[in-house]
Image (cartoon, rainbow, N blue to C red; front, side, top):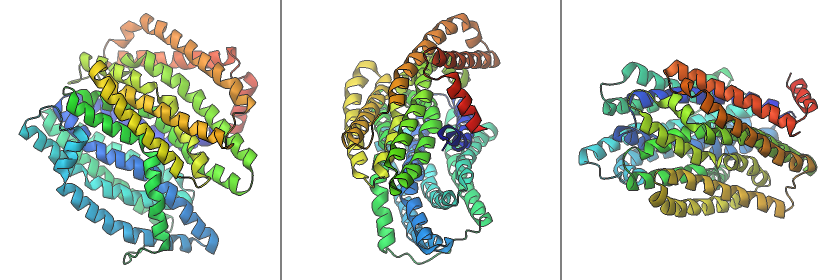
Length: 519
């Protein structure tokens, strides 16, 4: 299996979605800025975003897809899997409707919990934030049904359909900002909240249409919790906790920043996290999607050596891609933020603050991705409890880190605490796999890791000097800044590739073999 080629195909549509998300965030920075209106929307958007990451991209898929495929394999026909899907939806749908009603009714305490009560808002401001939360909450039910339908299509090897769904959410939000932005930030933020739920409806419509095209039509049934459905929900809960440590940490960081710091801090954290999520989404989620079914199949066939080799190559590829991304986001964070977000209401002070926050976040980037690579080593062996235990340790470390760092370094504190807690989580996962004999770094990985790190450092030094040379191109108008940023990125990538060859992290023969296999 060519892991690089497979990752490229899985990540292609994710790249489109993430680029559109950057366009969306750039427009949001222009029309909403980084004040209370922006903070209120981002708190309202945090819950749907977290729920999507926990439920849609992790827990539900990891529990539903194996059970769906097992039913198909046992009976030898698709109808057996669809019968299981209908039973799951029959229980899921009323639960989601009731859940949505309860969440809307409880929007006041939910908003308070997510924001930490903000920092001395007026009653009118807090009521406005609660209204935005109520507008976005229906997205939770919509994306949950999307997850079920997407799981079916993934099982039928129609991966691109589900990968394309997030594109529709970003298109809806971009359209709302571009065509319906108001005369002030508060009016525009309300439009954004409406766009979130509209985007969820578009995603659901897309998945229903694609399912019908694949011959999948689920009938409505009376809900009944049988053995299969009980097992499904039993698997979902620990998977959600294990997969969601980063999201839970961000939620805690947002709440503490909202309560302890001045207005704008939540926005700095959000914009920095969006850029930090770009390589995480492309590399981490893609590798996790590929490795779990692959390693599970290899272990099931008794090919333990192949499973370990696959995980070695996953770690190697993750570090090859994330080490330069980490260094670049630390060294040239400011020109990147300036190009993407410094327009309209988002000023130079906002750029400087967001850049420092991004640099802190990026310290944990390799750890974020390696968590996605290492966790399948546990799930493939039907161990969901160990990753949950380590995730909770990471959450506790994040809380302690926030309480220590926020009083000392302000809005940079939550980002640094989140990064360090991810490093703790990753270290615990790695050490446990190694202790159990489920992972051993092979000679190739041990040889390449320090050389890749050196290549990334050399690239970082070159970028630092390069930024000084092309500074006029990173401080002019938008298109001048865009050219300067692209030039920095292009030069950085070229230098990193050259440094990999000089340090012999990769040889010319390795690159030729990769190109041949990808062709």
